Length: 339
Ligand code: G3I
Image 1 (cartoon, rainbow, N blue to C red):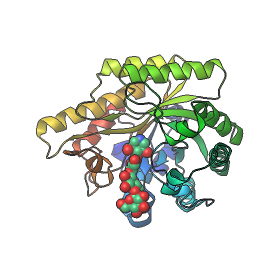
Image 2 (cartoon, rainbow, N blue to C red):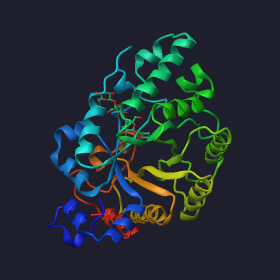
Image 3 (cartoon, helix red, strand yellow):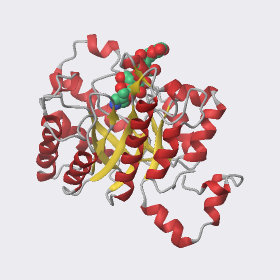
Image 4 (spheres, protein in one colour):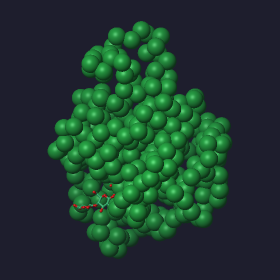
């Protein structure tokens, strides 16, 4: 949500209600600021919940919509976690980005191990997409339809989807999602494509091909997991985002975090502040950048330490959910348009 800090004693929503229509309008045109949410935290941590409601206007279920959570057993669909997040978001007037429909990770072992004939696999693929997208057709208006389909060398990832369905699965996923909800905006989402290079080019070329044959694809999600070893410059990010926007696509920054070595030094934290500020500023000033979403509210729930040895502190809040210095830097990048 989009508010001025000087009025911290007013609740965020009531402050918004007092703004003049012109200002509300200009806020409405700016990117929505989002964060990923974990079902388990919403169940158990009131402070976590309150911070999200107070500061953000969009949420992405971090794991609740993944295949292994939705289909823990063959022939079973379990929407408990996803339904909870959707209802909670609605109650708190938060937008929801659906994530991810088709991905190579968090696939249940029964599916990996089961030998299915091609026609059965196709059936399962189709029913997964149709069931998920139509279930939330009134509440999820942006979906990461296909996530991380490319390797870093620009080749297609040999996922369970590619192996069983061939490269057509990408196009088919968008078409099925569109049929299930023609109003939804459909995104291709990936990491490390913010920097010009082989992978970014491969995604760009795929999108050109899909758009040329009128596949319903409306946007591109740049995950933006910045870390030592992956530090695109401001000019590289701007140029890349603009190149994709020039295809007529909506831009979402979907999973921003900035990992630093731990324990961190003053210099590490200074560089991190600069990166958070830079990404916020780039999205804020770019007309086609409509959502800027963080991955993980605080360091205690961030995926980074368990996936990258020696890195961490990648979010805007510490483990006790206190704002860190990088929070203010991020807020500066958004022209203070964050509570
Ligand atoms: O599924 C088991 C569950 O059965 C068990 O109870 C639990 C106990 O620890 O572990 C569960 O799996 C974990 C899962 O999160 C759910 O909590 C996995 O070990 C853990 O690796 C998994 O991590 C998630 C990761 O995706 C998996 O690749 C992170 O929370 C999530 O933040 C991360 O998100 C992805 C985006 O979806 C796509 N882009 C990259 C991003 C970071 O990897």
